[in-house]
Amino acid sequence: MTEKDLALQSELLEKYPYVSVRPGSADHASFDVPADKALEFAFALRDKEGFAAISDCEGCDWGVDASPRFSAIWHVYSYERHLYVRMNVYAPDNAKPAVPSLCAVWAGCNWHEREAFDLVGIDFTGHPDMRRILMWDEYPYHPLRKDFPLAGVEVPHPDPDTVAQTGVRVLPAPMNGGPFVSAAGKTMRETEPRALDQEWSEGHRKPAA
Image 1 (tube, rainbow, N blue to C red):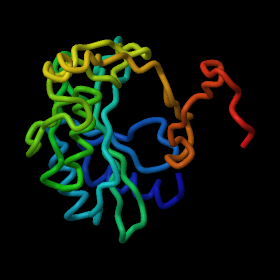
Image 2: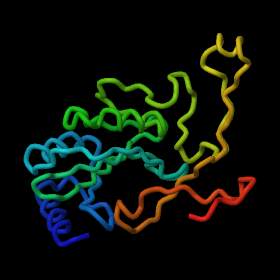
Image 3: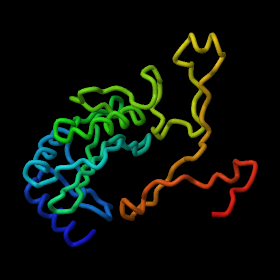
Image 4: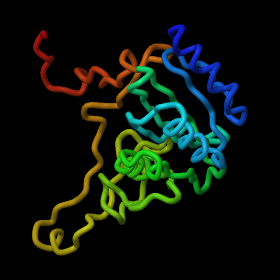
């Protein structure tokens, strides 16, 4: 982190003693925030600290043996400070993971939180439209959970009429373009997920770049 990031982290830690520094973050001021304080901290970041913009939100599955297993992470940006803050909120219940929605603070959270709900299965309480955004409503799985097989799962097609007319099925998607991996211990830009090389699964070698 830069000196400005470290100074911001110390400043916010002193002002808001209910948060704790998130270990291992190499790029931005990062905090673990209790679920019951998430909205309070988010409003403070926006209204008192100048963090007016939501950059992204994602759901994380830390592994089937982790406890807590699930968390949501928001990245917010201040146009005045030219700095990011990362806030991580763990879901207290592994069986039915839920954290507060921050849509009331940053309206741009809406679709990000829906994607995290869809793919990781974290419910964002208070969200104005908590529906799936990529998979259909009746889809029984959350494809980015660690216990979801990389080869995918065959499931019934959601439209029986289409099946009757065409015989189409919903087939597993075997890792084409993925799994996506990111390097640890670097900045957000450097850890942008990239697809693993899949040459071994193709009939011909890829042309040289």
